Image 1 (tube, rainbow, N blue to C red):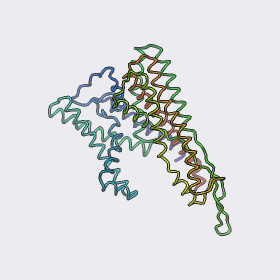
Image 2: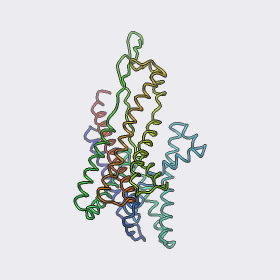
Image 3: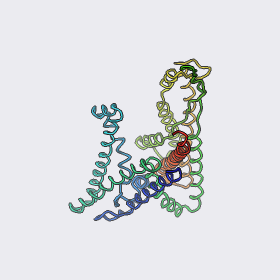
Image 4: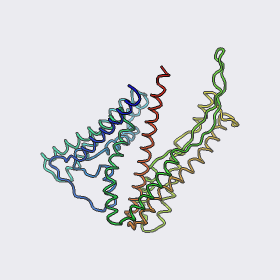
Length: 384
Protein backbone atom coordinates (compact mmCIF):
# COMPACT_ATOMS: atom_id res chain seq x y z
CA UNK A 1 0.00 0.00 0.00
CA UNK A 2 1.51 3.31 -1.04
CA UNK A 3 1.64 6.55 0.91
CA UNK A 4 -1.37 8.21 -0.71
CA UNK A 5 -3.60 5.14 -0.36
CA UNK A 6 -2.81 4.80 3.35
CA UNK A 7 -3.46 8.48 4.04
CA UNK A 8 -6.66 8.41 2.02
CA UNK A 9 -7.93 5.37 3.88
CA UNK A 10 -7.23 6.90 7.28
CA UNK A 11 -8.95 10.14 6.28
CA UNK A 12 -11.99 8.25 4.98
CA UNK A 13 -12.21 6.17 8.16
CA UNK A 14 -12.04 9.29 10.33
CA UNK A 15 -14.65 11.18 8.28
CA UNK A 16 -16.93 8.13 8.12
CA UNK A 17 -16.83 7.64 11.88
CA UNK A 18 -17.52 11.35 12.46
CA UNK A 19 -20.52 11.16 10.11
CA UNK A 20 -21.90 8.10 11.90
CA UNK A 21 -21.35 9.78 15.26
CA UNK A 22 -23.26 12.91 14.24
CA UNK A 23 -26.05 10.75 12.78
CA UNK A 24 -26.43 9.00 16.14
CA UNK A 25 -26.56 12.37 17.88
CA UNK A 26 -29.48 13.42 15.68
CA UNK A 27 -31.45 10.14 15.97
CA UNK A 28 -34.13 10.48 18.68
CA UNK A 29 -34.40 7.89 21.41
CA UNK A 30 -37.70 5.95 21.34
CA UNK A 31 -40.32 6.96 23.89
CA UNK A 32 -38.48 10.19 24.72
CA UNK A 33 -39.50 13.68 23.64
CA UNK A 34 -36.81 16.18 22.74
CA UNK A 35 -36.08 18.40 25.73
CA UNK A 36 -36.93 22.05 25.72
CA UNK A 37 -33.95 24.40 25.83
CA UNK A 38 -32.85 25.62 29.24
CA UNK A 39 -32.68 29.20 28.02
CA UNK A 40 -29.70 31.44 28.76
CA UNK A 41 -28.52 29.66 31.88
CA UNK A 42 -24.70 30.02 32.17
CA UNK A 43 -24.20 26.25 32.49
CA UNK A 44 -26.31 25.35 29.45
CA UNK A 45 -23.49 25.90 26.97
CA UNK A 46 -21.14 23.61 28.91
CA UNK A 47 -23.79 20.88 28.98
CA UNK A 48 -24.37 21.24 25.24
CA UNK A 49 -20.65 21.09 24.45
CA UNK A 50 -20.19 17.90 26.51
CA UNK A 51 -23.27 16.10 25.20
CA UNK A 52 -23.73 17.44 21.67
CA UNK A 53 -26.73 19.61 22.44
CA UNK A 54 -29.48 17.06 23.18
CA UNK A 55 -29.70 14.20 25.68
CA UNK A 56 -32.76 12.65 23.99
CA UNK A 57 -30.80 10.95 21.19
CA UNK A 58 -29.16 7.55 20.80
CA UNK A 59 -25.72 9.14 21.32
CA UNK A 60 -27.17 11.61 23.83
CA UNK A 61 -24.23 11.46 26.22
CA UNK A 62 -21.72 11.96 23.41
CA UNK A 63 -18.14 11.27 24.51
CA UNK A 64 -18.79 12.40 28.10
CA UNK A 65 -18.55 8.84 29.59
CA UNK A 66 -15.31 8.28 27.64
CA UNK A 67 -13.90 11.50 29.10
CA UNK A 68 -14.94 10.76 32.69
CA UNK A 69 -13.96 7.06 32.81
CA UNK A 70 -10.14 7.59 32.81
CA UNK A 71 -10.37 10.02 35.75
CA UNK A 72 -12.58 7.62 37.71
CA UNK A 73 -10.21 4.75 36.96
CA UNK A 74 -7.20 6.76 38.17
CA UNK A 75 -9.00 7.45 41.44
CA UNK A 76 -9.82 3.76 41.80
CA UNK A 77 -6.19 2.81 41.15
CA UNK A 78 -5.16 4.96 44.10
CA UNK A 79 -7.85 3.46 46.34
CA UNK A 80 -7.68 -0.21 45.28
CA UNK A 81 -4.29 -1.99 45.69
CA UNK A 82 -5.20 -4.65 43.12
CA UNK A 83 -5.55 -2.03 40.40
CA UNK A 84 -2.30 -0.38 41.46
CA UNK A 85 -0.57 -3.75 41.14
CA UNK A 86 -1.99 -4.15 37.63
CA UNK A 87 -0.56 -0.80 36.59
CA UNK A 88 2.87 -1.92 37.83
CA UNK A 89 2.75 -5.13 35.73
CA UNK A 90 3.56 -3.31 32.51
CA UNK A 91 1.92 -4.18 29.21
CA UNK A 92 -0.11 -7.14 30.53
CA UNK A 93 -1.56 -5.04 33.34
CA UNK A 94 -2.28 -2.18 30.92
CA UNK A 95 -4.43 -4.50 28.79
CA UNK A 96 -6.47 -5.52 31.84
CA UNK A 97 -6.89 -1.86 32.87
CA UNK A 98 -8.05 -1.07 29.33
CA UNK A 99 -10.79 -3.69 29.67
CA UNK A 100 -11.80 -2.19 33.01
CA UNK A 101 -11.89 1.27 31.45
CA UNK A 102 -14.20 0.06 28.68
CA UNK A 103 -16.56 -1.54 31.18
CA UNK A 104 -16.49 1.60 33.28
CA UNK A 105 -17.52 3.69 30.25
CA UNK A 106 -20.57 1.47 29.73
CA UNK A 107 -21.42 1.57 33.45
CA UNK A 108 -21.26 5.38 33.43
CA UNK A 109 -23.56 5.43 30.42
CA UNK A 110 -25.96 3.11 32.24
CA UNK A 111 -25.98 5.26 35.37
CA UNK A 112 -26.52 8.40 33.32
CA UNK A 113 -29.41 6.79 31.45
CA UNK A 114 -31.05 5.70 34.71
CA UNK A 115 -30.64 9.20 36.12
CA UNK A 116 -32.18 10.72 32.99
CA UNK A 117 -35.18 8.37 33.16
CA UNK A 118 -35.75 9.10 36.85
CA UNK A 119 -35.56 12.86 36.25
CA UNK A 120 -38.18 12.61 33.47
CA UNK A 121 -40.53 10.40 35.52
CA UNK A 122 -41.05 7.79 32.80
CA UNK A 123 -42.89 4.56 33.44
CA UNK A 124 -41.05 1.24 33.70
CA UNK A 125 -41.44 0.06 30.09
CA UNK A 126 -40.55 3.35 28.43
CA UNK A 127 -37.73 3.86 30.91
CA UNK A 128 -36.27 0.45 30.13
CA UNK A 129 -36.27 1.26 26.40
CA UNK A 130 -34.55 4.59 27.05
CA UNK A 131 -31.91 3.03 29.32
CA UNK A 132 -31.18 0.29 26.78
CA UNK A 133 -30.84 2.75 23.88
CA UNK A 134 -28.61 5.21 25.74
CA UNK A 135 -26.40 2.47 27.19
CA UNK A 136 -25.99 0.79 23.80
CA UNK A 137 -25.25 4.19 22.30
CA UNK A 138 -22.52 4.78 24.87
CA UNK A 139 -20.93 1.41 24.05
CA UNK A 140 -21.06 2.17 20.32
CA UNK A 141 -19.48 5.61 20.83
CA UNK A 142 -16.66 3.90 22.75
CA UNK A 143 -16.08 1.59 19.79
CA UNK A 144 -16.10 4.55 17.38
CA UNK A 145 -13.41 6.35 19.41
CA UNK A 146 -11.22 3.24 19.34
CA UNK A 147 -11.76 2.87 15.60
CA UNK A 148 -10.46 6.38 14.96
CA UNK A 149 -7.49 5.85 17.30
CA UNK A 150 -6.52 2.57 15.61
CA UNK A 151 -7.32 3.23 11.95
CA UNK A 152 -7.82 6.97 11.62
CA UNK A 153 -6.04 10.13 12.68
CA UNK A 154 -5.58 11.40 16.21
CA UNK A 155 -7.11 10.33 19.50
CA UNK A 156 -10.66 9.12 18.93
CA UNK A 157 -12.17 10.77 22.00
CA UNK A 158 -10.62 14.14 21.18
CA UNK A 159 -11.60 13.95 17.49
CA UNK A 160 -15.25 13.13 18.25
CA UNK A 161 -15.35 15.79 20.95
CA UNK A 162 -13.99 18.24 18.37
CA UNK A 163 -16.76 17.27 15.93
CA UNK A 164 -19.31 17.61 18.73
CA UNK A 165 -18.06 21.07 19.70
CA UNK A 166 -17.99 22.31 16.11
CA UNK A 167 -21.59 21.17 15.68
CA UNK A 168 -22.74 23.11 18.77
CA UNK A 169 -20.83 26.36 18.19
CA UNK A 170 -22.61 27.72 15.05
CA UNK A 171 -26.10 27.92 16.66
CA UNK A 172 -24.58 29.61 19.70
CA UNK A 173 -22.80 32.21 17.56
CA UNK A 174 -25.97 32.75 15.52
CA UNK A 175 -27.95 33.34 18.70
CA UNK A 176 -25.29 35.79 19.89
CA UNK A 177 -25.42 37.60 16.55
CA UNK A 178 -29.20 37.93 16.75
CA UNK A 179 -28.88 39.60 20.16
CA UNK A 180 -25.90 41.90 19.56
CA UNK A 181 -25.58 42.25 15.77
CA UNK A 182 -22.29 42.62 13.87
CA UNK A 183 -20.44 43.61 17.03
CA UNK A 184 -20.55 39.95 18.08
CA UNK A 185 -19.00 38.84 14.78
CA UNK A 186 -16.14 41.33 15.05
CA UNK A 187 -15.44 40.63 18.73
CA UNK A 188 -15.59 36.83 18.34
CA UNK A 189 -13.32 36.96 15.30
CA UNK A 190 -10.75 38.99 17.26
CA UNK A 191 -11.01 36.68 20.28
CA UNK A 192 -10.67 33.54 18.15
CA UNK A 193 -7.73 34.88 16.14
CA UNK A 194 -5.87 36.12 19.25
CA UNK A 195 -6.27 32.88 21.20
CA UNK A 196 -5.36 30.77 18.17
CA UNK A 197 -2.17 32.73 17.41
CA UNK A 198 -0.95 32.80 21.03
CA UNK A 199 -1.73 29.11 21.57
CA UNK A 200 0.09 28.04 18.40
CA UNK A 201 3.15 30.20 19.18
CA UNK A 202 3.44 28.85 22.73
CA UNK A 203 2.72 25.25 21.69
CA UNK A 204 5.23 25.25 18.82
CA UNK A 205 7.94 27.19 20.61
CA UNK A 206 10.74 25.35 22.38
CA UNK A 207 14.15 25.98 23.91
CA UNK A 208 16.76 23.57 22.58
CA UNK A 209 19.42 22.90 25.20
CA UNK A 210 22.53 21.59 23.37
CA UNK A 211 23.82 18.15 24.39
CA UNK A 212 27.08 16.48 23.40
CA UNK A 213 27.71 12.73 23.62
CA UNK A 214 31.12 11.28 24.36
CA UNK A 215 32.78 9.12 21.73
CA UNK A 216 33.00 5.40 22.38
CA UNK A 217 35.22 2.88 20.64
CA UNK A 218 33.54 -0.43 19.79
CA UNK A 219 36.12 -2.55 18.07
CA UNK A 220 37.80 -0.31 15.53
CA UNK A 221 34.83 1.97 15.02
CA UNK A 222 33.98 5.15 16.94
CA UNK A 223 30.41 5.84 17.96
CA UNK A 224 28.87 8.97 19.48
CA UNK A 225 30.29 12.45 19.57
CA UNK A 226 27.43 13.91 17.54
CA UNK A 227 25.68 17.01 18.93
CA UNK A 228 22.02 16.85 19.90
CA UNK A 229 19.63 18.85 22.06
CA UNK A 230 16.95 18.56 24.75
CA UNK A 231 13.70 20.25 23.66
CA UNK A 232 12.08 22.16 26.53
CA UNK A 233 8.61 23.55 25.97
CA UNK A 234 5.56 24.66 27.93
CA UNK A 235 2.89 21.92 28.15
CA UNK A 236 -0.47 23.21 26.93
CA UNK A 237 -3.48 22.43 29.14
CA UNK A 238 -6.91 23.77 30.04
CA UNK A 239 -6.72 22.46 33.60
CA UNK A 240 -5.40 25.72 35.17
CA UNK A 241 -8.26 27.80 33.75
CA UNK A 242 -10.85 25.25 34.87
CA UNK A 243 -9.37 24.95 38.38
CA UNK A 244 -9.24 28.73 38.78
CA UNK A 245 -12.84 29.03 37.59
CA UNK A 246 -14.05 26.32 39.98
CA UNK A 247 -12.19 27.92 42.90
CA UNK A 248 -13.72 31.35 42.22
CA UNK A 249 -17.15 29.79 41.75
CA UNK A 250 -16.98 27.85 45.05
CA UNK A 251 -15.54 30.68 47.14
CA UNK A 252 -17.89 33.45 48.30
CA UNK A 253 -16.55 35.84 45.65
CA UNK A 254 -18.64 38.65 44.20
CA UNK A 255 -18.54 38.29 40.42
CA UNK A 256 -19.90 41.82 40.15
CA UNK A 257 -16.62 43.14 41.57
CA UNK A 258 -14.17 43.84 38.69
CA UNK A 259 -11.30 42.62 40.88
CA UNK A 260 -12.31 39.02 40.21
CA UNK A 261 -10.73 39.32 36.76
CA UNK A 262 -7.33 40.12 38.30
CA UNK A 263 -7.75 37.29 40.81
CA UNK A 264 -8.69 34.92 38.01
CA UNK A 265 -5.61 35.91 36.01
CA UNK A 266 -3.28 35.34 38.99
CA UNK A 267 -4.86 31.97 39.80
CA UNK A 268 -4.54 30.76 36.21
CA UNK A 269 -0.85 31.76 36.12
CA UNK A 270 -0.12 30.07 39.47
CA UNK A 271 -1.94 26.84 38.57
CA UNK A 272 -0.29 26.74 35.14
CA UNK A 273 3.18 27.26 36.63
CA UNK A 274 2.64 24.62 39.32
CA UNK A 275 1.32 22.07 36.82
CA UNK A 276 4.18 22.59 34.38
CA UNK A 277 6.83 22.60 37.13
CA UNK A 278 6.00 19.04 38.18
CA UNK A 279 5.55 17.71 34.65
CA UNK A 280 9.27 17.09 34.05
CA UNK A 281 11.85 15.94 36.60
CA UNK A 282 15.17 17.51 35.63
CA UNK A 283 17.02 15.26 38.07
CA UNK A 284 15.95 12.22 36.05
CA UNK A 285 16.89 13.95 32.79
CA UNK A 286 20.37 14.74 34.12
CA UNK A 287 20.77 11.18 35.41
CA UNK A 288 19.77 9.75 32.04
CA UNK A 289 22.34 11.98 30.32
CA UNK A 290 25.05 10.64 32.61
CA UNK A 291 23.94 7.05 31.91
CA UNK A 292 24.22 7.42 28.12
CA UNK A 293 27.41 9.48 28.24
CA UNK A 294 25.84 12.85 27.39
CA UNK A 295 26.56 16.28 28.82
CA UNK A 296 25.60 19.91 28.32
CA UNK A 297 28.62 21.85 27.02
CA UNK A 298 30.04 24.11 29.71
CA UNK A 299 28.01 22.46 32.52
CA UNK A 300 29.35 19.74 34.82
CA UNK A 301 27.35 16.48 34.73
CA UNK A 302 25.10 15.40 37.59
CA UNK A 303 23.50 17.88 39.99
CA UNK A 304 24.99 20.90 38.20
CA UNK A 305 23.27 19.85 34.95
CA UNK A 306 19.99 19.26 36.80
CA UNK A 307 20.15 22.74 38.35
CA UNK A 308 20.91 24.35 35.00
CA UNK A 309 18.07 22.52 33.23
CA UNK A 310 15.70 23.38 36.07
CA UNK A 311 16.69 27.06 35.81
CA UNK A 312 16.05 27.14 32.06
CA UNK A 313 12.83 25.17 32.37
CA UNK A 314 11.42 27.47 35.06
CA UNK A 315 11.98 30.52 32.86
CA UNK A 316 10.14 28.78 30.02
CA UNK A 317 7.17 27.72 32.14
CA UNK A 318 7.00 31.20 33.73
CA UNK A 319 6.58 32.72 30.26
CA UNK A 320 4.11 29.97 29.29
CA UNK A 321 2.06 30.48 32.48
CA UNK A 322 1.88 34.21 31.82
CA UNK A 323 0.80 33.54 28.23
CA UNK A 324 -1.90 31.15 29.43
CA UNK A 325 -3.13 33.82 31.83
CA UNK A 326 -3.36 36.31 28.97
CA UNK A 327 -5.25 33.74 26.89
CA UNK A 328 -7.68 33.28 29.78
CA UNK A 329 -8.41 37.02 29.87
CA UNK A 330 -9.06 37.43 26.12
CA UNK A 331 -12.52 35.76 26.00
CA UNK A 332 -13.49 37.46 29.28
CA UNK A 333 -12.65 40.84 27.77
CA UNK A 334 -14.53 39.97 24.58
CA UNK A 335 -17.63 38.93 26.53
CA UNK A 336 -17.44 42.13 28.57
CA UNK A 337 -17.41 44.21 25.35
CA UNK A 338 -20.65 42.50 24.35
CA UNK A 339 -22.33 43.50 27.62
CA UNK A 340 -22.72 40.00 29.06
CA UNK A 341 -23.86 39.71 32.68
CA UNK A 342 -21.15 38.89 35.28
CA UNK A 343 -22.21 35.27 35.92
CA UNK A 344 -22.61 34.50 32.22
CA UNK A 345 -19.41 36.46 31.50
CA UNK A 346 -17.47 34.23 33.90
CA UNK A 347 -18.78 30.89 32.63
CA UNK A 348 -18.86 31.85 28.95
CA UNK A 349 -15.36 33.33 29.03
CA UNK A 350 -13.83 30.25 30.66
CA UNK A 351 -15.75 27.88 28.38
CA UNK A 352 -14.80 29.78 25.23
CA UNK A 353 -11.13 29.75 26.17
CA UNK A 354 -11.19 26.02 26.94
CA UNK A 355 -12.96 25.27 23.67
CA UNK A 356 -10.61 27.34 21.50
CA UNK A 357 -7.44 25.98 23.11
CA UNK A 358 -8.84 22.47 22.71
CA UNK A 359 -9.59 23.04 19.02
CA UNK A 360 -6.07 24.34 18.37
CA UNK A 361 -4.37 21.52 20.31
CA UNK A 362 -6.35 18.79 18.54
CA UNK A 363 -5.62 20.34 15.16
CA UNK A 364 -1.89 20.55 15.93
CA UNK A 365 -1.74 16.96 17.22
CA UNK A 366 -3.56 15.62 14.17
CA UNK A 367 -1.31 17.60 11.82
CA UNK A 368 1.79 16.21 13.54
CA UNK A 369 0.47 12.66 13.21
CA UNK A 370 -0.26 13.11 9.50
CA UNK A 371 3.21 14.55 8.90
CA UNK A 372 4.83 11.76 10.91
CA UNK A 373 2.99 9.11 8.87
CA UNK A 374 4.02 10.77 5.62
CA UNK A 375 7.68 10.79 6.64
CA UNK A 376 7.49 7.18 7.77
CA UNK A 377 6.03 6.08 4.44
CA UNK A 378 8.56 8.19 2.55
CA UNK A 379 11.61 6.60 4.18
CA UNK A 380 10.18 3.10 4.60
CA UNK A 381 11.75 1.73 1.33
CA UNK A 382 15.21 2.74 2.57
CA UNK A 383 14.77 0.91 5.90
CA UNK A 384 14.08 -2.53 4.43
